[in-house]
Image 1 (cartoon, rainbow, N blue to C red):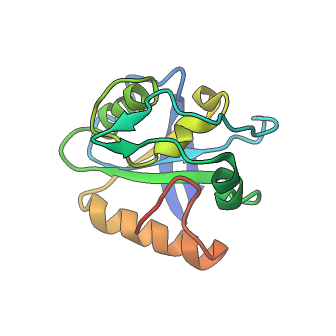
Image 2 (cartoon, rainbow, N blue to C red):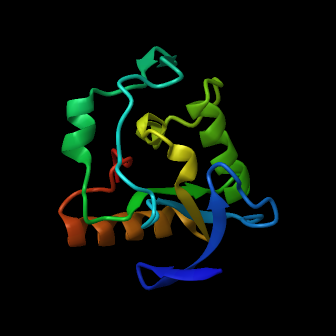
Length: 153
């Protein structure tokens, strides 16, 4: 299934719980999306992984609520240049599930209750760093801030 985000075609990779292994076997960018049937969004006070490289992983419920944009379905924009986008998303899942792997970006996705039901979408591209920055800029121009789980441009 293909869907347009930011006037670009993205390939559906599945839910975070049930990633499709045959999708995302290339370098590029990926987005984590809140599906329309997700239901009420609630947050966990703590993250599964407490500390990563001497940095606290979890943020307060108040900060999570302040970052939340109720009208935006894109929650995180990421990139992968050294491994496939599928493998990069697997690293995030391991990080959110208490494995000490380098996947600190997007860490607050793991504080969303039932985050496993969020959707992942992939886009193949040659210059993923450049494309990610473009997508973040487009998002910020539309909503006035970065996506929920992106902390820097």
